[in-house]
Image 1 (tube, helix red, strand yellow):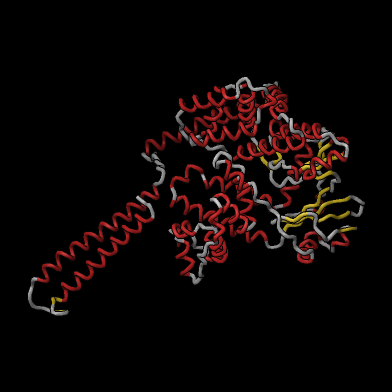
Image 2 (cartoon, rainbow, N blue to C red):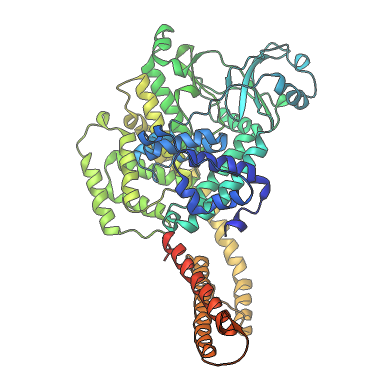
Length: 563
C-alpha cells in the first residue's frame, strides 16, 4: 500500500523534509503508523527522531501549527483553509490555524529581474518610469513592489516567486497520497471528507498561483461596485499582467492595520467605516454571490470622506443562487429566532448524512431559545455561528465546502467591525440586506428567469424521454441491465479478506507439514540430519517458519489497531 502510494520517487526529497518536521514536532508515532519511516530508511535517508524539550509544554494544536509553518507555503495555506472549517475543528484548533501568517523575508530583486523582464517583454526601466526595488510586502507565493507607469499612474506590481510552482505541485501530490493513506489507516476520519477539503484547497491554491485569476476577481468585484462611490476597487492594468505578474492601481490611504489612531488622526468616522465595510461584504455575500473571503483589516484601505478600498482578491468565495437562498433563510432564522426553518436548512446541508432528526430539532430549539428576548444589539453573530457549528459537529453534520469560507468571512467581518466600533451590531446591519435579498428572490424578473430555466429543463427531459424509454426497454430485453452496488470501505474489506485468506492458507500448510513431518519421523531409513530423518527435520523447520510468520502478521495487525 505504502510503496504503491509513494511510487513517485521524484518527490522523495520533499517527503523526507516534511517527515522530518513531523517527527521533530512530536508526530513520530503517526509517521511510524503510516509506514513512512521504513520507506525513507530503505531509500538511505536517516531520520532525526529527537524531540525537543519545549514541545512538552505545547499542546497538540500548537505543535500542528508550528509544524505547518516550518513545512512551508503549501502547508501554511492549507492551515489557513482549515481555519475556515469551523464545522470540523473546535475553537482551540481554529485559533491556532488563524495564527498561520504567510509572511516571509523578501527575495532580492535581482533574483526576480530575469523573470519579470521576460513577462514584460522588456527591461523594467523601459516599461516603468519608476520602480522601487524594495518590496512593500512579501509572502510565500509573491511579493509586491511599487512602480509608476509612463502616463504617471502609480501602480503596485505583484510578482510570483521563481520556482514556487514545482514545489507546491510536489506538496499537493504528497498531500493527496498521504490523505489516502490516512483515510485507510484512520477510517473515522472519512466522515470529515478530507479528500473534498483537499480538492477545495487545491483549487484555491492553484488560483492563487495564477495571478491572472486575482486580476479577474478584482475586476469582477469592481463591476459589482461600479455604482457605489463609497467603495473603491483597484483598477487592473491588463496590458502588463500575466500568470506570474499582476499590475494594479496603487491606492493611497490608511492601511487597515493602523485602524484606531490613524483613522482618528485623519478625521474619519470609525462608525461609518464599520457600517460601510459591513454593507459592502454583506452585499457581496447576499446579493452578488461573490465575496472577498478574507476581510481582515490588512485588506482594507481607508480613504478620505469615509470611503473604503478593498485589496487582495486572491482568496474569494462564491455562492450559487440556490445556496444564497439557503444562506438568507439561515440568517433570517437566526435573526427572527425561527427554529423550524433553521432545522430545514441544516437538513438540506446534511446531504447524505442521516442525523437523529428529533434530537436535532430539540437542540436547535434550545439554541434559538437561548437568544430569545435578547436585544439585537447584544447578539454576537460570530458567537452564534460558532455555537451552531459546534452543534453541527455534535450531530456529525458537515458544512458544504462553499459555506465554510462564508462562515469564516462573517466571523472575521464582525471582529473587524468591532475594532472600528465597539458597539458595532452586525445583526442589525444585516437585517436590511436580508430583507432586500428576500424581496429580490420573489421579484418578477427573478421568478421569470427561474421559470424559464425550469421550463427549459423540463422540455429537455420530456424531449429525451421517448429515446430514454426505448433504450431502457432494449437493455431489459437483452438482459444487459446491471445493478451497481457501492459499499463503503469495500476496498479495505477486500484487503482484509485477502490477508485473512493468506493467513489461513499458511496455517493449513503449516499444520499439514507438522502432521506429515511427525509421520516421517516415525519411519526408519532414508537420509538423516543430526541423527533424525532429514525430510522430517526440513518439514518441522518449514512449519516453524510458517507459524512464526502467522504470529508476526497477527501481532503487527494488533499493534496497529486493525480488526
